[in-house]
Image 1 (cartoon, rainbow, N blue to C red):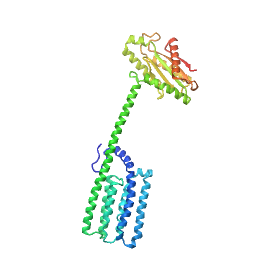
Image 2 (tube, one colour):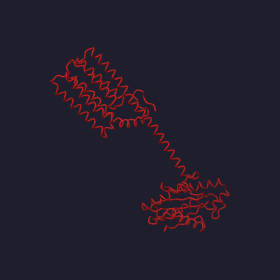
Image 3 (cartoon, one colour):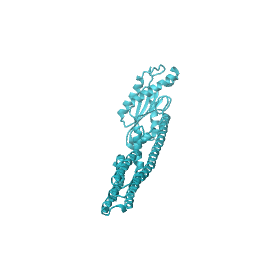
Length: 386
């Protein structure tokens, strides 16, 4: 994943948004530490330069201390608010600038010989780059503005000599370079960690997807695309329990292609496979609900599980399934009941209070299927589960 070498922003906008969302959460602890540290540093700095502050400005200086400390407390409180996460960059840049401006307030009231401004400014620069949590490019913009303002104020008030300003600028420049390198490397580290986590997550997602695909394949019949016997054996007991628990009805249907062995002997196994696929396709078209379960549980035997139907709907569905298969008009000259492929169906509807073991229901419907065959095939046999 490419990113800009200077701003460090990812070239992919979607990736950049994902990174910034995580970066905000990862930076919260640094942001809170920075707010505490900035208040303490400002207090120490003001006490350090108090010897060059005119006595008549003492109250004003303490007012500035209180404002700075209250600002830090307010900022810390905001970090616990949801809106802070949404406007993280805005809040942190504003606070960093507010924090940096603290170095100028004592200068305004200092004697003309005061040249300590760069001490606090260097501390401010380090804190902004390393602790505040703003992005590198934002920290750099804030620091440059603060340095320019500090120098303008110091020079305009005559608080630095030529020798002092050279020394101060060297110290400020050196601290800025080192702090900028530190801030750059910190954000670069965050971004590389993000890329590593992203790559790992992609690999995990790919493995999970492959796992799901393999599981799906293991549950599917390769010829028809329907669920296989293994899946049916797992899901049928669960559907029985679900219907009983929710107080719903359960339709269970078994169907068998009539004289299918004769069909294979007459037309060959490739034609038999094609007929099985056509039957499976017809069943899927008839049973359209996501919850409807159709499985191929044997060579030419299929099972259907449907929940939440009444008796009239069940019998209508069974009749449609029988009629739709014959309507395919798959030629079957060796059949003894029709010129086309037909099916026999056994079907039951189980009420919640009659729900029993799945094996019992299966055996009951298997007998109904046998009755449909004994009665002449190409029909369904229905009975309520008692």
